[in-house]
Length: 204
Image 1 (cartoon, rainbow, N blue to C red):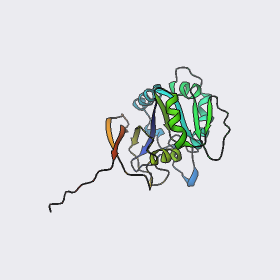
Image 2 (tube, rainbow, N blue to C red):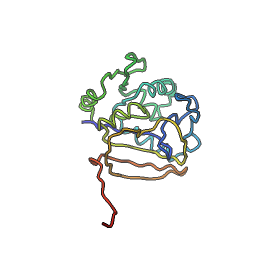
Image 3 (cartoon, rainbow, N blue to C red):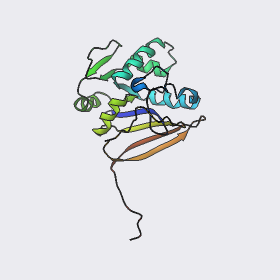
Image 4 (spheres, helix red, strand yellow):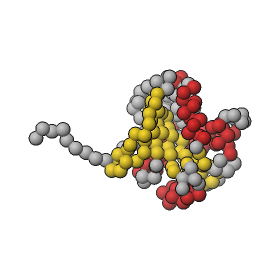
């Protein structure tokens, strides 16, 4: 049975919106698109290549699907593992407003909570979520994420879509491994560790 993993780029204050280009996702008047580009380096590239090498399928939100489908089919270098995986492997799009998608090997998922469990049974390694802020919120709320892969960059943005929004169910996570890139990004992998635990440092 496959695991569901989330990979995302985050600022220090938790923003994940439009890391790749100014016009990637300007919703909410977001004007800082492309904030990862100045910090992208070979270390980041190796991390992303390793993650994509583990994929059996992808689960995407509609906005991220639109961004990816406009870009990655145009990348035809067979040595580009990200393009090769995205263009060839099954892709499932969670959307309430759209059901038809033209990128090859793409299917519509109308009910994420119900269908993710069945999707996991169809694959052996990983179903990967990349970006997809709204979808990620739903998956986190329903406790469907097996592993988080977070690349946190040394920038503060102050506005924009966040991975962990208000109302997320409290959880504990276990840090599995962590490393840094030459540009100063921190890559951390977390797995679920049950309910949030609390305590006290009080002396009496």
